[in-house]
Image 1: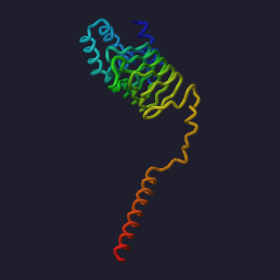
Image 2: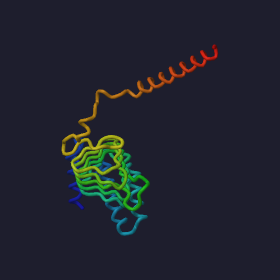
Image 3: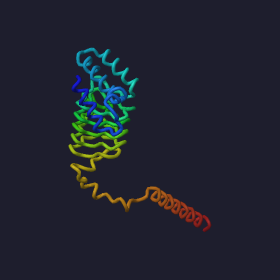
Image 4: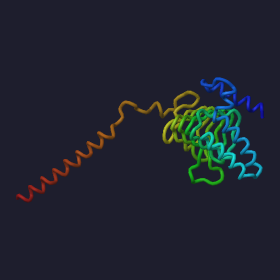
Length: 217
C-alpha cells in the first residue's frame, strides 16, 4: 500500500508543475483522495459488498467532485489533474500511468449491455471535457484532445481530435486525410445559404411577372 502511495505521489510530482511537496499532494489533491477511496470501494465491490462500495464511492464523489464507480478498474499511478466533474463508469478500465483532466467522462452510450464503458491503455492523456463513450479501446500512449467525443477505437500512439473524434496523428505523423484537407478554399455556409435564397427569390419574382403578363394579355 505504501509503495503504491509513493508511486502515486511521484507521478503527481512528475506531471503537475504546481505540486510543491509530498504532504501537499497527499492531503490536498482531490485526485489522490478519489483514487485511494476507489481502491477501498473496489475491494468491497469485488467481494460482493456492493452497498458499502457505493457508499464509499458516493462519499468520495461528494468530497472531491470525482465520480468513480466501484466496479471500474484503475491501473497504477493514475494522475487526475483538477478532477472536478470526472465520471468513470462501472466497466471502464484504465491502464497504468494515465493522466486525466477535469470534466472527462468515461461513459456508456446506452446501447450496450455487459461491457459498456471504454478500455484505456497505458500512458494515455485525456484532455479536459473529453467524452470517451462505449466499449471501445483507446490504445496506449495516445492523446485525446480537450472536448473531443470519442466513439470508436483509437490505435496506439495516436492523437484524436474533434466531435466525433478523428485520429489526426499516429506516432507523430499526420494521417493522410489530414494533409488533403483544404483549409483555405472552404465554402462559407452563410454565403451559400444567401445565394440559394436569392435564387429562389428571383425565381418567384420571375414567375409572378410571367403570370402578370399572361393576365394582361
